[in-house]
Image (cartoon, rainbow, N blue to C red; front, side, top):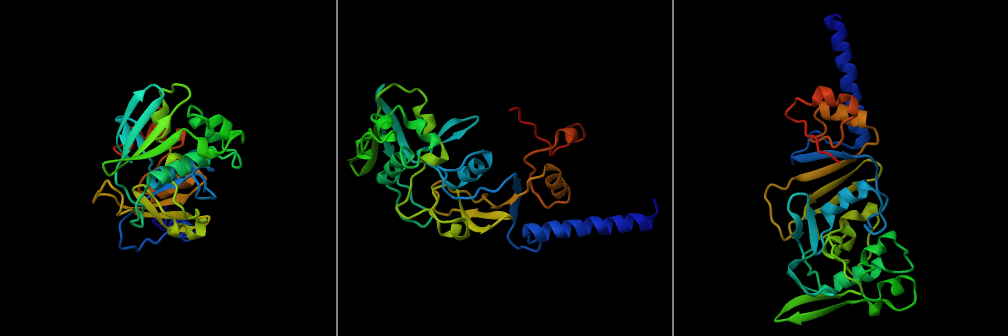
Length: 281
């Protein structure tokens, strides 16, 4: 292969990546450092209760945090609670921390109750409702037999601290783990916006949406009102790329900071590299 041929191939490759950048809306001249990775598909709404699949879950875990989050090594991690105590197998009392939404307004106990009632709303008919079926009257509410106000969750104020009290009909050893899902995060009174107005939404997690480029990407910026502060939290851009080989080429070219999935035929070649991390599933 001649030097001229190599140069021509390099130009073609460079041209291909320019097309990728243009198609995905990448700004390679940006001044703010951005951590980029890809998702295989684009979620079509911002309601975590209505989204299915890992793509939406990955995004919403960064936008919404409820009473708990879950860490693979640490297990349950406290988010919206100071402490939770089982009074007996059918009663759980949780003291809430003083958290705020991404716009600085307070998150209240009522915001959590609004979520639990919404999960069980018979009009929505969510498949995720089963996560709360252990609660008192939950099944009857889901089947439209009684009003949601009868749900076994109430609030109390103890020396200035908001408290959520859960009453169960049947013991559920995994109940607190169920509360770690993104769709169990508090729900604000204002409507959930459409993607084109995503920056107007209220978020309770470490990130908020700065801009949604329909069909291309979503840009996340750190939520400065998130209760767990971190100066290391970067701006993040999630690109919607439905082909693993395309994502790999963008990673090789430095357009992606992290490659979430590696096609199996490349594992042998990458296994000895420092940037290769294999997580058994």
